[in-house]
Length: 297
Image: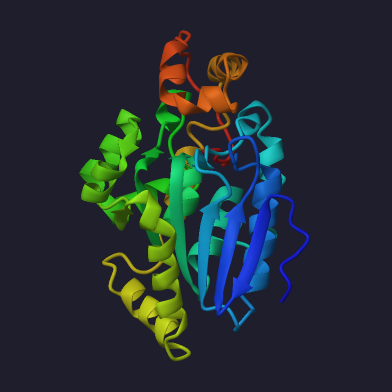
């Protein structure tokens, strides 16, 4: 397969390893373009028996992926328009996308450099493994500062990786985690010195790709079955809970517009996103209107 025609991805497949590079300037926002390219790639690679391992990485060193597009908060219909008619209709489009990645038969590895927040780190959590450049990578789920919570699969993936108590700390504390703490919590597999990260992931990917056909897929199936609640996260419950906070009420949307005016989704604003979000005061909160499922993260 040729893996061409993408706008925000570059794909290079060799020796049974597909290197998938996210290139969606300025901060690799998970927007409609990137979501569409990722869906198209996963649709194609799922059928490619010549690829055994997929490595997801960023073209730049400052951002793996900043987060999902803030514009989806201003007009939720632009997110719901991305729904996959062939996927589980009870899931929102970002859950559908991340499950498309999580359930691939190939082994998937996220190689992290720079900031990976919200929808960006949810995408990485949908991969089988995560390796990060030590002291050059930062993880965060800052959605609570936006008046929502992780709704692209994040609560389910995170709980399995770090446990409920630490997941609550990450989700409600909305702090920025460095690689040392993220590794200790189990959010990432391992922090690797930046100068050795590429070689480490390359060697691991090639080692897995060289296994006899079917070994890796069978191992994934067995390990999934070992999870106490079964192999499939309960994303329908996450979607139902997320509908209580998104689409957001007007005061939350207005606050996010201020965040955008002050640098949201720009390089300078995203470097210190948590600080930027905290600097914009919350308006008086009224009761939330009834809403439909959806999940920008």
